[in-house]
Length: 134
Image 1 (cartoon, rainbow, N blue to C red):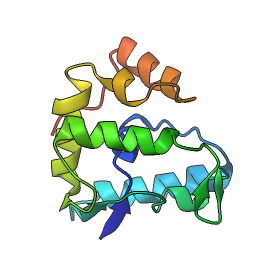
Image 2: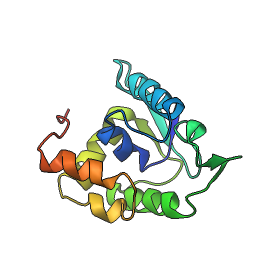
Image 3: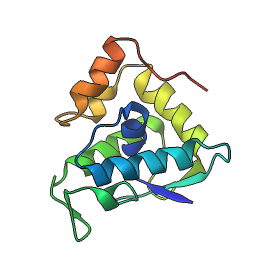
Image 4: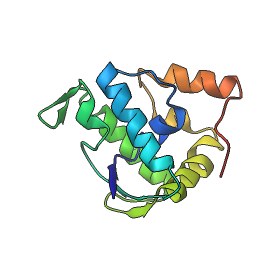
């Protein structure tokens, strides 16, 4: 089981190898490889730090230096996808919900307001470089 903050489904979808640090990027790539392998692992949607946060330089002893921004992203992501903290589902099912509930209806700005990485995601969409639906 992979523990995942809900908004990290969006981060994973748009990840292009950029991040806070080399360690963070390496960890993100490893998590994506685990999620995208053929086993379609189960994930649990968690509040607070997850396996991606573990290598983030904004993580200080389990607390995020970004304050309440990530919590807000999680809550909006859950609302739009009709999910709750603690829900467990297969990665591919969560990925589809992200696609149909947030990306296709163009609600990314609702979730990721004031995210420092949003420009990357918007540029990907503007260039029509959106990951294929599964």
